[in-house]
Image 1: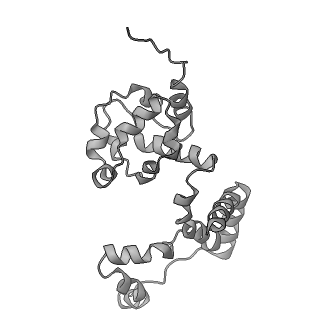
Image 2: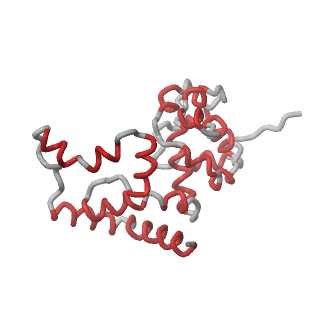
Image 3: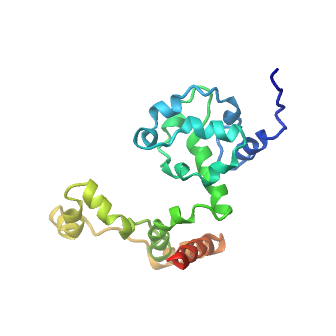
Length: 200
């Protein structure tokens, strides 16, 4: 005998929380998932790791909140391939963004974010994004010639007669920094940084 599950019953509550999140653009796509696996078959992260978009949605539908502590959710890098191929209008990458935000709000995943503090710092100091130095060795290994290119970028720009990189004026930098402070972004970044530096 099979049991009947009503939409308002748990474990659907977890899926409902995701559906009503402001980042979800696919309305009730999560609930329409038929577990066809199209998302997984086209996902670059699934191809190169144990990340499985179909499994993410299955766990959400089962109300499995332990997914918030699963390292695999951090393997999605939002290429939106799953978003574009889902036959029922689901978006696992958006679901993943929401899962990560819920995790972060619960103090989970700070170790995953710590590596990206250089991005946050560059927003405060220059109002633009920049590649954090922590990634330089990896990029140098994965992209032959990158390090030499980076070291000589000024000379290359001069040789190509390009203008210097456009940097925001001080007023813009101050305004962006103020916005990031007022919205709580700065406090969250400081909390993440402090939590990881205490552990070292």
